[in-house]
Amino acid sequence: MTPEEAKLILSARRSDQIDPADAPAQEALQLVAAMPELAAWWQAEQAFDRAFARKLASIAPPRELHSAILRGGATIFAARNLISETTDADTSDAAGEGAADGREKVVPFYDANGNGLGEVAGTRPNPHWFRVALPWSLAASVALALLGFSMFFKAQKLEADAPDDLAGFTQYATKMEEGHTFPFNHSTKLEEMESDLAKNQAPHADKLPDRAGVTEIDGWSVVEWQHHRATEVRLHGDTTIDLFILARADFPREKEHAQPEVKLSGNYAVTIWTEGPNIYMLLTENPGAKPTGGNAAAKMNTPADANAAAVPAPDTQGTGSSADLPHRTPQPGATGAGN
Amino acid sequence: MIGNLSLDFQKLVDEHYSSLYRFAYSLAGNEHEASDLTQHTFFIYANKGSSLRDTTKVKSWLFTTLYREFLRQRRSAQRTQPQDEETLELSAPVVNSDVMATVDGASAVAALEQLEESYRAPIALFYLQDLSYKEIADVLEVPIGTVMSRLSRGKAQLKKILLEHPRTA
Image 1: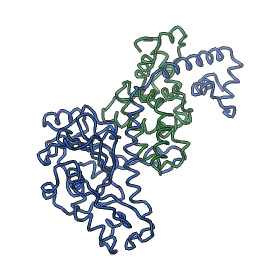
Image 2: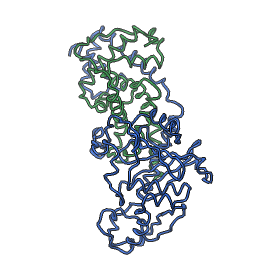
Image 3: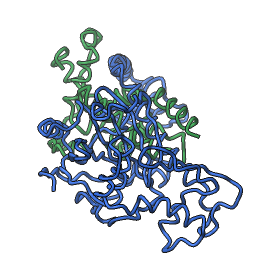
Image 4: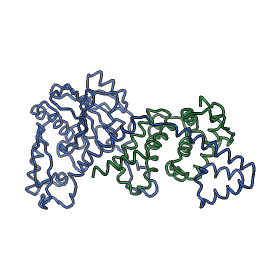
Protein backbone atom coordinates (compact mmCIF):
# COMPACT_ATOMS: atom_id res chain seq x y z
CA MET A 1 0.00 0.00 0.00
CA THR A 2 1.29 3.43 -0.89
CA PRO A 3 0.90 6.52 1.28
CA GLU A 4 -1.55 7.97 -1.25
CA GLU A 5 -3.66 4.84 -1.07
CA ALA A 6 -3.57 5.00 2.72
CA LYS A 7 -4.75 8.61 2.60
CA LEU A 8 -7.58 7.73 0.25
CA ILE A 9 -8.76 4.94 2.55
CA LEU A 10 -8.43 6.86 5.80
CA SER A 11 -10.08 10.00 4.38
CA ALA A 12 -13.32 8.04 4.17
CA ARG A 13 -13.14 6.80 7.77
CA ARG A 14 -13.92 8.59 10.97
CA SER A 15 -11.10 7.90 13.38
CA ASP A 16 -13.43 6.82 16.19
CA GLN A 17 -15.34 4.44 13.94
CA ILE A 18 -12.65 2.33 12.32
CA ASP A 19 -13.75 -1.25 12.52
CA PRO A 20 -11.05 -3.76 13.52
CA ALA A 21 -12.44 -5.96 10.75
CA ASP A 22 -11.87 -3.20 8.21
CA ALA A 23 -8.77 -4.72 6.62
CA PRO A 24 -7.85 -1.87 4.24
CA ALA A 25 -8.18 0.68 7.05
CA GLN A 26 -6.08 -1.47 9.39
CA GLU A 27 -3.39 -1.81 6.78
CA ALA A 28 -3.43 1.95 6.24
CA LEU A 29 -3.06 2.51 9.99
CA GLN A 30 -0.06 0.19 10.04
CA LEU A 31 1.56 2.32 7.38
CA VAL A 32 0.71 5.43 9.41
CA ALA A 33 2.52 3.90 12.38
CA ALA A 34 5.56 3.23 10.21
CA MET A 35 5.80 6.61 8.46
CA PRO A 36 6.12 9.80 10.55
CA GLU A 37 5.05 12.05 7.70
CA LEU A 38 1.90 9.98 7.14
CA ALA A 39 1.29 9.97 10.90
CA ALA A 40 1.45 13.78 10.95
CA TRP A 41 -1.02 13.90 8.10
CA TRP A 42 -3.40 11.52 9.86
CA GLN A 43 -3.24 13.52 13.08
CA ALA A 44 -4.01 16.76 11.25
CA GLU A 45 -6.79 15.05 9.29
CA GLN A 46 -8.50 13.81 12.44
CA ALA A 47 -8.26 17.21 14.10
CA PHE A 48 -9.80 18.88 11.06
CA ASP A 49 -12.55 16.28 10.85
CA ARG A 50 -13.48 16.73 14.50
CA ALA A 51 -13.45 20.52 14.25
CA PHE A 52 -15.51 20.68 11.07
CA ALA A 53 -18.03 18.16 12.37
CA ARG A 54 -18.48 20.33 15.47
CA LYS A 55 -19.18 23.34 13.26
CA LEU A 56 -21.90 21.51 11.36
CA ALA A 57 -23.39 20.14 14.55
CA SER A 58 -23.86 23.69 15.78
CA ILE A 59 -26.47 24.32 13.10
CA ALA A 60 -29.81 24.13 14.84
CA PRO A 61 -33.07 23.43 13.03
CA PRO A 62 -35.72 26.14 13.25
CA ARG A 63 -37.64 25.87 16.50
CA GLU A 64 -40.99 25.23 14.85
CA LEU A 65 -39.78 22.57 12.42
CA HIS A 66 -40.23 19.67 14.82
CA SER A 67 -43.82 20.51 15.67
CA ALA A 68 -44.61 21.31 12.03
CA ILE A 69 -43.49 17.85 10.98
CA LEU A 70 -45.54 16.20 13.71
CA ARG A 71 -48.66 18.18 12.81
CA GLY A 72 -48.40 17.14 9.19
CA GLY A 73 -47.78 13.55 10.17
CA ALA A 74 -50.77 13.53 12.49
CA THR A 75 -53.07 14.59 9.67
CA ILE A 76 -51.71 11.93 7.36
CA PHE A 77 -52.07 9.19 9.94
CA ALA A 78 -55.57 10.25 10.91
CA ALA A 79 -56.72 10.03 7.32
CA ARG A 80 -54.90 6.77 6.70
CA ASN A 81 -56.34 5.25 9.83
CA LEU A 82 -59.86 6.16 8.88
CA ILE A 83 -59.39 4.76 5.41
CA SER A 84 -57.84 1.54 6.68
CA GLU A 85 -60.62 1.05 9.21
CA THR A 86 -63.28 1.16 6.58
CA THR A 87 -61.50 -1.23 4.26
CA ASP A 88 -60.14 -3.49 6.92
CA ALA A 89 -60.80 -7.21 6.60
CA ASP A 90 -62.43 -6.86 3.24
CA THR A 91 -60.95 -10.15 2.21
CA SER A 92 -63.20 -11.83 4.70
CA ASP A 93 -66.26 -10.00 3.51
CA ALA A 94 -66.61 -11.10 -0.07
CA ALA A 95 -69.12 -9.36 -2.27
CA GLY A 96 -72.54 -10.80 -1.77
CA GLU A 97 -72.22 -11.76 1.85
CA GLY A 98 -72.89 -8.43 3.45
CA ALA A 99 -71.64 -8.27 6.99
CA ALA A 100 -73.13 -11.35 8.41
CA ASP A 101 -70.09 -12.29 10.39
CA GLY A 102 -71.20 -10.63 13.58
CA ARG A 103 -68.61 -7.90 13.33
CA GLU A 104 -70.53 -4.72 13.32
CA LYS A 105 -68.87 -1.77 11.79
CA VAL A 106 -70.57 1.52 12.32
CA VAL A 107 -69.77 3.69 9.38
CA PRO A 108 -70.56 7.35 9.57
CA PHE A 109 -72.60 8.42 6.59
CA TYR A 110 -73.41 12.08 6.72
CA ASP A 111 -76.27 13.90 5.19
CA ALA A 112 -76.05 17.40 3.92
CA ASN A 113 -76.62 18.77 7.41
CA GLY A 114 -73.74 16.82 8.82
CA ASN A 115 -76.06 14.46 10.63
CA GLY A 116 -75.17 10.81 10.64
CA LEU A 117 -77.47 8.79 8.46
CA GLY A 118 -76.82 6.19 10.95
CA GLU A 119 -75.48 3.66 12.24
CA VAL A 120 -75.77 1.43 9.34
CA ALA A 121 -75.11 -1.38 11.71
CA GLY A 122 -73.99 -4.66 10.26
CA THR A 123 -72.80 -3.17 7.03
CA ARG A 124 -69.67 -1.42 5.98
CA PRO A 125 -68.60 0.32 2.84
CA ASN A 126 -66.94 -2.26 0.71
CA PRO A 127 -64.57 -1.17 -1.99
CA HIS A 128 -65.49 -4.32 -3.85
CA TRP A 129 -68.78 -2.63 -4.71
CA PHE A 130 -66.90 -0.32 -6.91
CA ARG A 131 -65.17 -3.13 -8.70
CA VAL A 132 -67.94 -5.57 -9.46
CA ALA A 133 -70.53 -4.81 -12.08
CA LEU A 134 -73.63 -5.21 -9.88
CA PRO A 135 -74.21 -5.38 -6.19
CA TRP A 136 -75.70 -8.75 -5.41
CA SER A 137 -76.40 -8.79 -1.77
CA LEU A 138 -79.33 -7.03 -0.12
CA ALA A 139 -77.05 -5.49 2.48
CA ALA A 140 -74.77 -4.23 -0.26
CA SER A 141 -77.77 -2.87 -2.13
CA VAL A 142 -79.05 -1.01 0.89
CA ALA A 143 -75.71 0.56 1.56
CA LEU A 144 -75.19 1.28 -2.11
CA ALA A 145 -78.55 2.96 -2.27
CA LEU A 146 -77.51 5.18 0.60
CA LEU A 147 -74.26 6.00 -1.13
CA GLY A 148 -75.81 6.16 -4.55
CA PHE A 149 -78.41 8.62 -3.35
CA SER A 150 -75.71 11.24 -3.15
CA MET A 151 -73.20 9.85 -5.62
CA PHE A 152 -75.38 10.21 -8.68
CA PHE A 153 -76.62 13.70 -7.90
CA LYS A 154 -75.79 16.27 -10.48
CA ALA A 155 -73.44 18.93 -9.21
CA GLN A 156 -75.91 21.72 -9.82
CA LYS A 157 -78.67 19.99 -7.93
CA LEU A 158 -76.25 19.29 -5.10
CA GLU A 159 -75.35 22.88 -4.88
CA ALA A 160 -78.93 24.04 -5.05
CA ASP A 161 -80.13 21.66 -2.40
CA ALA A 162 -77.15 21.60 -0.10
CA PRO A 163 -77.47 23.84 2.90
CA ASP A 164 -75.19 26.77 3.06
CA ASP A 165 -72.89 25.37 5.69
CA LEU A 166 -69.66 23.46 5.95
CA ALA A 167 -71.33 20.07 5.80
CA GLY A 168 -73.00 21.14 2.61
CA PHE A 169 -69.73 22.26 1.11
CA THR A 170 -68.12 18.99 2.14
CA GLN A 171 -70.75 17.05 0.29
CA TYR A 172 -70.44 19.28 -2.74
CA ALA A 173 -66.66 19.08 -2.80
CA THR A 174 -66.45 15.31 -2.45
CA LYS A 175 -69.08 14.64 -5.07
CA MET A 176 -67.47 17.06 -7.46
CA GLU A 177 -64.13 15.32 -6.92
CA GLU A 178 -65.59 11.98 -7.92
CA GLY A 179 -67.20 12.94 -11.14
CA HIS A 180 -65.73 16.16 -12.36
CA THR A 181 -62.66 18.21 -12.52
CA PHE A 182 -62.23 21.63 -11.17
CA PRO A 183 -60.66 23.94 -13.68
CA PHE A 184 -57.06 24.21 -12.76
CA ASN A 185 -54.18 26.56 -12.95
CA HIS A 186 -51.40 24.07 -13.55
CA SER A 187 -48.47 25.52 -11.77
CA THR A 188 -46.20 24.42 -8.96
CA LYS A 189 -45.26 27.94 -7.95
CA LEU A 190 -46.64 28.93 -4.59
CA GLU A 191 -46.00 32.62 -5.09
CA GLU A 192 -47.94 32.53 -8.33
CA MET A 193 -50.85 30.89 -6.56
CA GLU A 194 -50.81 33.45 -3.77
CA SER A 195 -50.84 36.27 -6.27
CA ASP A 196 -53.69 34.75 -8.27
CA LEU A 197 -55.81 34.04 -5.19
CA ALA A 198 -55.28 37.53 -3.83
CA LYS A 199 -56.28 38.98 -7.18
CA ASN A 200 -59.45 36.87 -7.23
CA GLN A 201 -60.22 37.59 -3.58
CA ALA A 202 -60.18 33.89 -2.82
CA PRO A 203 -59.20 32.53 0.59
CA HIS A 204 -55.50 31.91 0.91
CA ALA A 205 -52.63 31.98 3.38
CA ASP A 206 -48.99 32.95 3.31
CA LYS A 207 -47.93 29.35 3.11
CA LEU A 208 -49.37 25.88 3.03
CA PRO A 209 -50.44 24.88 6.53
CA ASP A 210 -48.17 22.33 8.20
CA ARG A 211 -51.17 20.11 8.87
CA ALA A 212 -51.58 19.60 5.15
CA GLY A 213 -48.58 17.29 5.36
CA VAL A 214 -47.30 18.42 1.97
CA THR A 215 -45.01 21.22 0.92
CA GLU A 216 -45.55 21.31 -2.85
CA ILE A 217 -48.50 21.95 -5.11
CA ASP A 218 -49.58 20.84 -8.55
CA GLY A 219 -52.15 23.54 -9.14
CA TRP A 220 -55.13 25.41 -7.81
CA SER A 221 -58.53 26.78 -8.71
CA VAL A 222 -61.09 29.15 -7.33
CA VAL A 223 -64.44 27.51 -6.59
CA GLU A 224 -67.71 29.41 -6.51
CA TRP A 225 -70.29 27.84 -4.23
CA GLN A 226 -73.48 29.21 -2.73
CA HIS A 227 -72.31 32.79 -3.16
CA HIS A 228 -69.06 31.93 -1.45
CA ARG A 229 -65.63 31.66 -2.89
CA ALA A 230 -63.29 28.86 -1.89
CA THR A 231 -59.84 27.86 -2.98
CA GLU A 232 -58.89 24.38 -4.04
CA VAL A 233 -55.23 23.44 -4.02
CA ARG A 234 -54.11 20.19 -5.59
CA LEU A 235 -51.25 19.05 -3.41
CA HIS A 236 -48.34 17.16 -4.86
CA GLY A 237 -48.46 13.49 -4.00
CA ASP A 238 -48.98 9.97 -5.22
CA THR A 239 -52.71 10.01 -4.63
CA THR A 240 -55.24 12.75 -5.07
CA ILE A 241 -54.97 15.16 -2.18
CA ASP A 242 -56.91 18.37 -2.36
CA LEU A 243 -56.83 21.16 0.15
CA PHE A 244 -59.82 23.45 0.22
CA ILE A 245 -59.43 26.81 1.87
CA LEU A 246 -62.56 28.57 3.05
CA ALA A 247 -63.07 31.82 4.86
CA ARG A 248 -64.34 31.39 8.40
CA ALA A 249 -66.35 34.53 7.94
CA ASP A 250 -68.45 32.71 5.34
CA PHE A 251 -69.48 30.10 7.89
CA PRO A 252 -70.27 32.07 11.04
CA ARG A 253 -72.16 29.22 12.66
CA GLU A 254 -69.30 26.79 12.23
CA LYS A 255 -67.49 26.00 15.44
CA GLU A 256 -63.77 26.27 15.76
CA HIS A 257 -61.78 23.14 14.93
CA ALA A 258 -58.53 23.79 16.72
CA GLN A 259 -57.60 20.14 16.28
CA PRO A 260 -58.14 18.33 12.98
CA GLU A 261 -61.33 16.30 12.77
CA VAL A 262 -61.45 13.47 10.30
CA LYS A 263 -64.42 11.69 8.81
CA LEU A 264 -65.21 9.65 5.75
CA SER A 265 -67.27 11.19 2.99
CA GLY A 266 -67.81 9.14 -0.10
CA ASN A 267 -64.45 8.00 -1.37
CA TYR A 268 -62.51 10.48 0.67
CA ALA A 269 -61.19 11.01 4.13
CA VAL A 270 -62.08 14.57 5.00
CA THR A 271 -59.93 16.37 7.53
CA ILE A 272 -61.12 19.74 8.79
CA TRP A 273 -59.41 22.28 10.97
CA THR A 274 -59.40 26.02 11.50
CA GLU A 275 -56.32 28.18 11.48
CA GLY A 276 -56.38 31.94 11.57
CA PRO A 277 -59.13 33.34 9.35
CA ASN A 278 -59.42 30.12 7.36
CA ILE A 279 -61.11 26.77 7.49
CA TYR A 280 -59.02 24.05 5.88
CA MET A 281 -60.53 20.93 4.42
CA LEU A 282 -58.19 18.22 3.25
CA LEU A 283 -59.60 15.54 0.98
CA THR A 284 -57.48 12.44 0.83
CA GLU A 285 -58.50 9.85 -1.67
CA ASN A 286 -59.23 6.38 -0.42
CA PRO A 287 -56.98 4.28 -2.66
CA GLY A 288 -59.20 1.27 -2.12
CA ALA A 289 -62.25 2.92 -3.60
CA LYS A 290 -63.05 3.76 -7.17
CA PRO A 291 -65.25 6.67 -8.16
CA THR A 292 -68.71 5.57 -9.23
CA GLY A 293 -69.84 8.74 -10.85
CA GLY A 294 -68.51 10.67 -13.74
CA ASN A 295 -65.54 9.79 -15.79
CA ALA A 296 -62.51 8.54 -13.97
CA ALA A 297 -60.40 9.87 -16.79
CA ALA A 298 -61.75 13.28 -15.98
CA LYS A 299 -59.61 13.13 -12.88
CA MET A 300 -56.59 13.53 -15.12
CA ASN A 301 -56.28 17.21 -14.48
CA THR A 302 -52.76 17.60 -15.70
CA PRO A 303 -50.51 15.92 -18.22
CA ALA A 304 -48.59 14.66 -15.21
CA ASP A 305 -51.60 12.64 -14.15
CA ALA A 306 -51.87 10.91 -17.48
CA ASN A 307 -48.17 10.30 -17.82
CA ALA A 308 -47.29 9.75 -14.22
CA ALA A 309 -43.94 8.00 -14.10
CA ALA A 310 -43.46 5.63 -11.21
CA VAL A 311 -40.00 6.42 -10.01
CA PRO A 312 -38.79 3.72 -7.69
CA ALA A 313 -37.82 5.04 -4.34
CA PRO A 314 -34.33 4.52 -3.05
CA ASP A 315 -34.05 0.83 -2.64
CA THR A 316 -31.56 0.74 0.19
CA GLN A 317 -30.21 -2.64 0.96
CA GLY A 318 -32.74 -4.82 2.62
CA THR A 319 -35.72 -2.58 2.13
CA GLY A 320 -36.80 -4.28 -1.03
CA SER A 321 -39.38 -3.07 -3.44
CA SER A 322 -41.99 -2.47 -0.79
CA ALA A 323 -40.32 0.86 -0.12
CA ASP A 324 -40.88 1.96 -3.70
CA LEU A 325 -42.42 5.35 -3.83
CA PRO A 326 -43.85 6.17 -7.18
CA HIS A 327 -44.07 9.87 -7.45
CA ARG A 328 -45.01 12.16 -10.25
CA THR A 329 -42.28 13.92 -12.05
CA PRO A 330 -43.62 17.45 -12.07
CA GLN A 331 -44.34 18.70 -15.54
CA PRO A 332 -43.26 22.19 -16.43
CA GLY A 333 -45.87 24.45 -14.91
CA ALA A 334 -48.31 25.64 -17.47
CA THR A 335 -50.34 28.43 -16.08
CA GLY A 336 -53.55 29.46 -17.57
CA ALA A 337 -56.94 30.70 -16.63
CA GLY A 338 -59.40 28.14 -15.39
CA ASN A 339 -61.69 26.50 -17.89
CA MET B 1 -53.34 1.55 15.57
CA ILE B 2 -53.00 5.19 14.83
CA GLY B 3 -51.62 5.66 18.31
CA ASN B 4 -48.76 3.28 17.54
CA LEU B 5 -48.15 4.79 14.14
CA SER B 6 -48.05 8.27 15.59
CA LEU B 7 -45.75 7.27 18.42
CA ASP B 8 -43.35 5.50 16.07
CA PHE B 9 -43.43 8.47 13.77
CA GLN B 10 -42.74 10.87 16.60
CA LYS B 11 -39.84 8.75 17.74
CA LEU B 12 -38.45 8.77 14.25
CA VAL B 13 -38.80 12.52 13.98
CA ASP B 14 -37.19 13.05 17.38
CA GLU B 15 -34.28 10.88 16.42
CA HIS B 16 -33.52 12.09 12.94
CA TYR B 17 -35.01 15.46 12.15
CA SER B 18 -32.01 17.47 13.35
CA SER B 19 -29.43 15.60 11.34
CA LEU B 20 -31.74 15.44 8.34
CA TYR B 21 -32.20 19.18 8.57
CA ARG B 22 -28.44 19.73 8.77
CA PHE B 23 -27.96 17.57 5.69
CA ALA B 24 -30.69 19.49 3.89
CA TYR B 25 -29.14 22.76 4.96
CA SER B 26 -25.70 21.73 3.77
CA LEU B 27 -27.20 20.92 0.37
CA ALA B 28 -29.61 23.79 -0.03
CA GLY B 29 -27.72 26.49 1.86
CA ASN B 30 -30.79 28.19 3.26
CA GLU B 31 -33.18 27.58 6.11
CA HIS B 32 -36.41 27.76 4.14
CA GLU B 33 -35.46 25.17 1.55
CA ALA B 34 -33.83 22.97 4.16
CA SER B 35 -37.00 23.01 6.28
CA ASP B 36 -39.13 22.19 3.27
CA LEU B 37 -36.91 19.30 2.25
CA THR B 38 -36.93 17.91 5.76
CA GLN B 39 -40.69 18.20 6.16
CA HIS B 40 -41.29 16.73 2.74
CA THR B 41 -39.09 13.73 3.56
CA PHE B 42 -41.02 12.95 6.71
CA PHE B 43 -44.35 13.39 4.96
CA ILE B 44 -43.27 10.87 2.33
CA TYR B 45 -42.39 8.53 5.16
CA ALA B 46 -45.74 9.11 6.85
CA ASN B 47 -47.49 8.19 3.63
CA LYS B 48 -45.39 5.28 2.57
CA GLY B 49 -42.68 4.45 5.02
CA SER B 50 -44.68 1.93 7.00
CA SER B 51 -44.17 -0.44 4.09
CA LEU B 52 -40.42 -0.37 4.69
CA ARG B 53 -39.42 -3.97 5.20
CA ASP B 54 -36.16 -3.49 7.02
CA THR B 55 -36.71 -0.92 9.75
CA THR B 56 -33.00 -0.87 10.57
CA LYS B 57 -32.50 0.89 7.26
CA VAL B 58 -34.89 3.70 8.00
CA LYS B 59 -32.10 6.19 8.62
CA SER B 60 -30.52 5.51 5.24
CA TRP B 61 -33.97 5.60 3.69
CA LEU B 62 -34.66 9.04 5.10
CA PHE B 63 -31.36 10.48 3.94
CA THR B 64 -31.75 8.90 0.52
CA THR B 65 -35.26 10.25 0.13
CA LEU B 66 -34.18 13.72 1.13
CA TYR B 67 -31.25 13.62 -1.27
CA ARG B 68 -33.50 12.47 -4.10
CA GLU B 69 -35.93 15.28 -3.41
CA PHE B 70 -33.09 17.74 -3.42
CA LEU B 71 -31.86 16.45 -6.77
CA ARG B 72 -35.38 16.50 -8.21
CA GLN B 73 -35.80 20.11 -7.27
CA ARG B 74 -32.37 21.00 -8.54
CA ARG B 75 -33.03 19.35 -11.86
CA SER B 76 -35.94 21.62 -12.44
CA ALA B 77 -33.81 24.60 -11.47
CA GLN B 78 -31.20 23.44 -14.01
CA ARG B 79 -28.07 23.90 -12.00
CA THR B 80 -24.77 23.74 -13.83
CA GLN B 81 -23.21 20.34 -14.21
CA PRO B 82 -20.29 19.46 -11.98
CA GLN B 83 -16.88 19.55 -13.50
CA ASP B 84 -15.14 16.46 -14.61
CA GLU B 85 -13.51 15.08 -11.47
CA GLU B 86 -10.43 14.02 -13.37
CA THR B 87 -9.48 17.60 -14.09
CA LEU B 88 -9.35 18.55 -10.43
CA GLU B 89 -6.06 18.10 -8.71
CA LEU B 90 -5.94 16.35 -5.41
CA SER B 91 -4.07 18.75 -3.19
CA ALA B 92 -4.51 18.65 0.54
CA PRO B 93 -3.50 21.82 2.34
CA VAL B 94 -3.28 21.76 6.11
CA VAL B 95 -5.90 23.75 7.96
CA ASN B 96 -4.71 24.46 11.45
CA SER B 97 -6.74 25.15 14.54
CA ASP B 98 -6.28 28.91 14.25
CA VAL B 99 -8.15 28.90 10.98
CA MET B 100 -10.86 26.59 12.29
CA ALA B 101 -11.40 28.87 15.27
CA THR B 102 -12.64 31.55 12.91
CA VAL B 103 -15.17 29.23 11.25
CA ASP B 104 -18.69 28.98 12.61
CA GLY B 105 -21.65 26.86 11.54
CA ALA B 106 -22.83 29.29 8.91
CA SER B 107 -19.42 29.63 7.33
CA ALA B 108 -18.96 25.88 7.42
CA VAL B 109 -22.14 25.53 5.37
CA ALA B 110 -21.06 28.35 3.11
CA ALA B 111 -17.83 26.48 2.48
CA LEU B 112 -19.81 23.36 1.62
CA GLU B 113 -21.85 25.40 -0.84
CA GLN B 114 -18.73 26.27 -2.71
CA LEU B 115 -17.77 22.67 -3.14
CA GLU B 116 -18.36 20.90 -6.40
CA GLU B 117 -21.87 19.47 -6.28
CA SER B 118 -20.64 15.90 -6.52
CA TYR B 119 -18.54 16.40 -3.41
CA ARG B 120 -21.02 18.33 -1.32
CA ALA B 121 -23.40 15.53 -0.40
CA PRO B 122 -20.77 12.94 0.57
CA ILE B 123 -18.78 15.50 2.54
CA ALA B 124 -21.90 16.71 4.36
CA LEU B 125 -22.96 13.17 5.18
CA PHE B 126 -19.47 12.32 6.38
CA TYR B 127 -19.29 15.27 8.75
CA LEU B 128 -22.81 14.81 10.06
CA GLN B 129 -21.39 11.54 11.43
CA ASP B 130 -24.60 9.67 11.12
CA LEU B 131 -23.59 7.38 8.33
CA SER B 132 -20.61 5.19 7.53
CA TYR B 133 -18.94 5.50 4.13
CA LYS B 134 -20.81 2.38 3.04
CA GLU B 135 -24.12 3.91 4.08
CA ILE B 136 -23.14 7.11 2.29
CA ALA B 137 -22.63 5.05 -0.86
CA ASP B 138 -26.14 3.62 -0.41
CA VAL B 139 -27.71 7.03 0.11
CA LEU B 140 -26.02 8.54 -2.90
CA GLU B 141 -26.42 5.40 -4.95
CA VAL B 142 -22.81 5.36 -6.08
CA PRO B 143 -20.10 2.74 -5.66
CA ILE B 144 -18.05 2.72 -2.48
CA GLY B 145 -14.91 3.54 -4.42
CA THR B 146 -16.58 6.64 -5.82
CA VAL B 147 -17.55 7.77 -2.32
CA MET B 148 -14.01 7.34 -1.11
CA SER B 149 -12.62 9.28 -4.01
CA ARG B 150 -15.14 12.09 -3.59
CA LEU B 151 -14.49 12.29 0.12
CA SER B 152 -10.79 12.55 -0.39
CA ARG B 153 -11.03 15.15 -3.13
CA GLY B 154 -13.89 16.95 -1.45
CA LYS B 155 -11.96 17.37 1.77
CA ALA B 156 -8.99 18.74 -0.12
CA GLN B 157 -11.21 21.25 -1.86
CA LEU B 158 -12.97 22.14 1.38
CA LYS B 159 -9.69 22.90 3.09
CA LYS B 160 -8.61 25.13 0.22
CA ILE B 161 -11.86 27.05 0.47
CA LEU B 162 -11.50 27.49 4.21
CA LEU B 163 -7.94 28.65 3.90
CA GLU B 164 -8.79 31.15 1.21
CA HIS B 165 -11.95 32.54 2.84
CA PRO B 166 -12.26 31.32 6.41
CA ARG B 167 -14.91 33.79 7.56
CA THR B 168 -16.82 34.51 4.43
CA ALA B 169 -16.65 30.89 3.19
